[in-house]
Image (cartoon, rainbow, N blue to C red; front, side):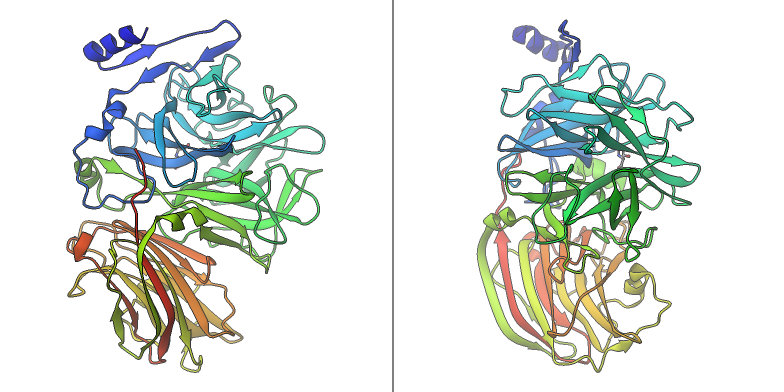
Length: 573
Ligand code: DQQ
């Protein structure tokens, strides 16, 4: 068979061995994509490629799919075009890792092969069933171009990497019937089991312009019945893609299995908004008897809601890492240059650094922090402390490779008397960041970092805070400003922003930025507000990139402590 495959690859460019067993399953055809096999040899422009973010050697990637931890191995599947650097021909690419940092690419796990997915294998999630049996639920685009939900199971559970996946004949599990719009029915979640022994799963949907998370129930994971009511829905918000629903503990940072409920637990519900291409989440209460979810009144349940990330971050998905008892978040950061650039580069899209996520002590929001394993990539480091930055002050961080770096800094200020007044009409932080950039003088702030900066400062991506005085409290704004990130005019250069709900009593604010050539992933106030920017400097590249800390506010700021490390390039292929 192997010889025949190689002969086929030689003559036709692919091998398609459609093996079928007679035990009721259709085996996922073992299609070898020659492009995928020859990735190492690909000649692509490496200038803006990331060094330690997850990225295959070439081609388009989008949503992280079905991440899971199984028998000591982390699996990452993701939407992948084996044939080019734009969206299309989507398969589930598959990589495995022992530390979420170094990755081994495998052949695609799921790809179009059957009537129920012949036109596409779109996003979905993994669930580990009793008996330690992983399964994947994913959206297939069927022969009639309808979105349907399918199941795939490992062909051989004794393969430690679960390389091959098979698609049972009883697919699809869920079809768009009973008035469900067949082009707005996708992205099944990880399933959870209720006390009644029934499995539940959500599917993203819209009815008219009402975003919905349809609920399906099953006793055997084969026959699924649509519940009369969605778990949750919101009017006038458009299609809900990639819903995610999981429990968080009221105490501590440990994650919980998706089926956990009961005392001491709250739930998080996240959706990706197809219309605006950003996500929001609410923290709330799940009523299992009624299968209803009610967001807390501290979580706005609309497009102005809390976001995991206020920048370039979409189609995210969490999973429970049973090995380290934590919940981990993956998100996709698209390019923000042009499609023509992507084709020229030969690649598009990265996954952000996996983040551990847990409920803040206030119970009102989540905290996110890069998984601890990323620190194993830190090479030589530099350290600064007690550096004063008066108005207009700027200090360079030297001695490391700042184009691929991890920077942690704590700023302090003596008092907040000089804070600018806050106008209550400023409800959109991104708009506010657009008005009040890093060069616009303030009272307390702007202060922060100029990352990927050129030596004459005609290019930089600034990540900074600005503190305002509102009627009853102070308001902290965090911005990741791409407007001056590149001299190139044709790339998308917004100034992203989010408010930071932080206690300023200690007079300090911290910032961590993971800088990686074309990405700056930042965590404000210990992970309360996160912003990812994709940037494409012309000059501030590789050894020509610089890193500075700055203050453009009238209140003097001190760098209490700054630590920065060059980052090692882990194994990706
Ligand atoms: N991407 C997938 C869909 C999903 C969208 C297709 C979100 O399943 O809704 O590649 O980015």
